[in-house]
Amino acid sequence: MIKTKKIILFIVEGITDEMSLSLILSKLVQDSSVQFHVINQDITADFNSNCQNIIRKIDHHVKKFLAQNNGLKKTDIKEIIHLVDTDGAFIKEDFVVEDKSQEKTFYTVNSIVTNKRDLIVERNERKSGILNKLYQTSHIGRIGYKVYFFSCNLEHVLHNCQNTACEKKRAYSYEFVDKYVGKEKEFVNFLSNNNFTTPGDYKETWRFIKEDCNSLSRYCNFHLYFK
Image (cartoon, rainbow, N blue to C red; front, top):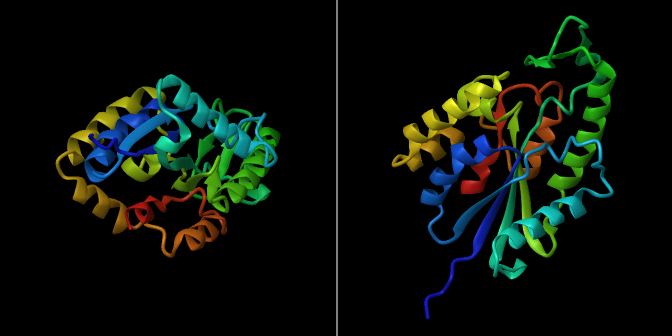
């Protein structure tokens, strides 16, 4: 009887995250089945999320993934890998700048400029608390769990574009796949040996991203997954 591969479940915010990474990761991870679950929101910044319910909400999405794939059960999942944007969540309140003329929230490497300052300050407080909890969580629903960050967001790391228009994200995804499919080891090298490669082990990278304005700057710790 053919042994079915265990699933590595990647939980991501949007479809372009899956488009950018799924095929490359499938080529790199040969001993497991790479599957993506797109939740179409930033669950760590959602107004209904908090430190008390975030584990339960992620577990709900795992169950939702299983329900969408008939016949699968939790024991089929080897591990959960959660990819998140930091969005400047750990910066001090002073670095959130109000500008009523700004139509959309705009990120720089040392500030968040917004016309809704109070909402961003409140979001950062909630999101930073949730991320603190998640990176110290090792299991969800008895499945191994780790969370890796892209700062300030995925496009910032992969394309050095901090404020990417929605209509450009798909084009960037196609470009990235074209560049690294068939050259997957170069992708790992890109993550592992770059100015944005966050130094240290897993917990040290999370401590680093919480310092100063690092959660706005271009940093990523996803290279650690391949070690």
